[in-house]
Image (cartoon, rainbow, N blue to C red; front, side, top):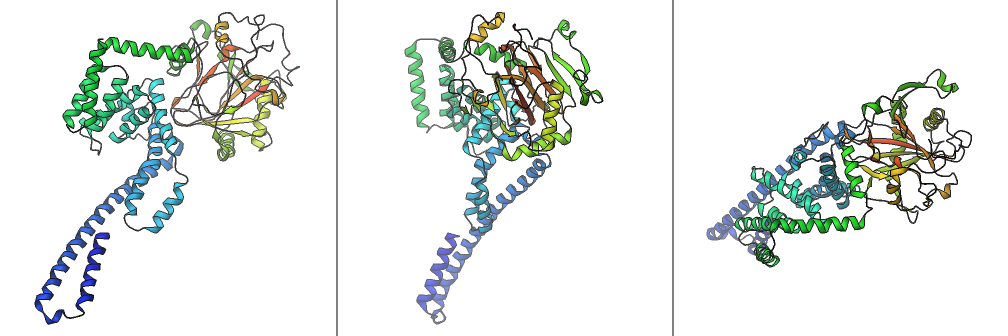
Length: 555
């Protein structure tokens, strides 16, 4: 457009200067013919450029039209696939801005004005990075290879969309910026693989090899770093940093005088020492147990133990409201006793609770064990909202039902907490109750004492409530989860899977008032789907005659 304007300006300036004297000289008029020819050539170039731009914009519009048609038909199901969630973050945070720049080359006030307004609601760099890290977290927890994720091959997944070369490269960069060289290597390798298979991309092999070679070096594999750097130089002989790195890697390997394997051993040993120093002694063991249970491995439900589990109709000692319609109660675990209640919530009640919670959902927080202050944490990825008991008749009815079933006072319980787990949403192992100062005379839980000692004392988290500690947990599942999202108990090897409309219940405290440390539990990362739950944490105050105290830690 600018180029055309220059020619038009020159043309009119020429006409202005000659002041209609062209007819007096054919020779001068021939000059106009060549000017016009140049103008036509410039105009064709402008049209070609605009057509090319318009073709690209049309391609975007058609692709996004199909995509939004699929995504809006089942928003939660679509975003339940972590790849779809990541690509949505990436599109809105990065790719729409590229389209804006493309359109800005030609005036389009209505579109730009609308896009500018909508940009206020777009995800940020942090959102895109968070979605990328969630994919890597799922990759580790469920032991998924990069190619399976890239092709969208996840258990129970619908709306399958593959990752492009550029997507894989961006995931590698997210890991690299976090100094996570392990995942950088995995995703740069995948980007290279897809490039070698002929997938079209503006990304070059040199760009991926640059990140890959340095990350391999950081992981201690010097010889492989040298090989990859040589490959990078072969692809791009002008890459100065690669030449410098190759020289450095060779000198480093020579000066160290150690084999590739020895170098790697030193690296991993130093890393593990640092991790052990920074974390509780049982961290890695618990982490392994937690992730195994999330994968459905290591569950310790023996046939003998299973024989002690039963299903029954529960009317809570002939409670008036449960005599006619008793609850279907199923034992999930014998000790500690965990039960599941079927048909706890109806679909209509679930939808109403979600409707009430959605406008208030905010990043879930955890209480700092030292200060007692609520704060966000990377080990809890979800959003939550609290619903007052009198918020709506449905909330009041659900609370009353919980009281009827458990026989416990809910007037002193916390509000109903509704939580929705996002892409890779999880809550790593934690206690629901507040841990108290250690007393060796009260610690009689046998081999669990070592576990107890490894966790810091907590600030009195519930002091301001004035209702005592969290006696029990009533957890409602408000959605089915196609893959992942189990509630697991690493201490005794239990995994409880979400089932819409059901609820699970357990006591966090013994009758003596001491915490049952076996109830440390976790919400596994959601691999596919959208997980909705609601919690009712029941406190000690008001239970004096409903669950009398005891002198021992016998539940």
